[in-house]
Length: 353
Image (cartoon, rainbow, N blue to C red; front, side, top):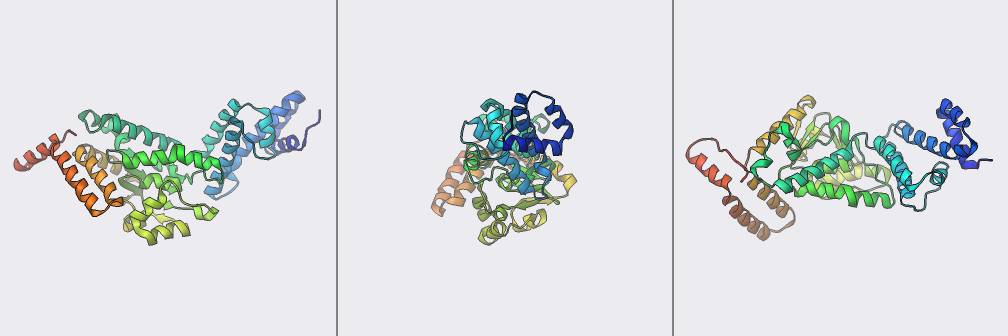
């Protein structure tokens, strides 16, 4: 049984990268090699993707390219022509492709960005379920950190110049189905959201971080819109977030020049709340979360809505929103407690009611 050029190319990849595995494969029946060679070649291509370039974005894009191959196979679509992808599509089932995508995702999400998105979604859902009630105000040690703090960049998490940036349907699906909803939930959450960034926040990772109400960053962190370097455009709400946070000139500078903006410069620009020493970042974020958790959360939610109205509405709309918000906050038990505490010259004890 002769192998075609694609299978021979797969065998050559394995022989160069993993001679022992190549020899083991050659001991298998010839028909079995038609499956083993594409699978092993895929594994090698995915495993080495992060190491063949010093450019993070290029490495991420290489990994996403393989994830898109898996997606095409899983959806029984037309699979792109490639010496490994083509025989792989013939060797595995759509269900197998989903499993292989998990392997590629493990490499692509080395910064745990998917975990950050999932945490965002869970935190927003929790906020919606619990609202401002007292039971939502559990101690930080019991998980309140997820109620208020999104750790964007932990262990370099937002090194994620997101891998979905391909000029095909995969990018659009990823944005519409995952990233955009997550960022929207951060922006619309009724509780304050704190984002702590201790690594590069690039691409959609930058958007996710900047969607927070309070963004703290370790001094070694930076913010980057690197899309222009590969002929793409910012997404994940970056255009909206940056333009409103730092104005047109600086937003244009970040997006069109692809410059890294360090944490201290970001604070100076008003892009983030505060730049802190790296080793103090998590403690600062938790302390702020605790302070907010003990505050008048009904008022916080109203403030967030009013700020959103101010960004997109006119003065008449803002005045109306403020008046309605004052009525809502004024009717809360926290407002009553605040007034009594002021008269009694003591610190108020808000309950989120």
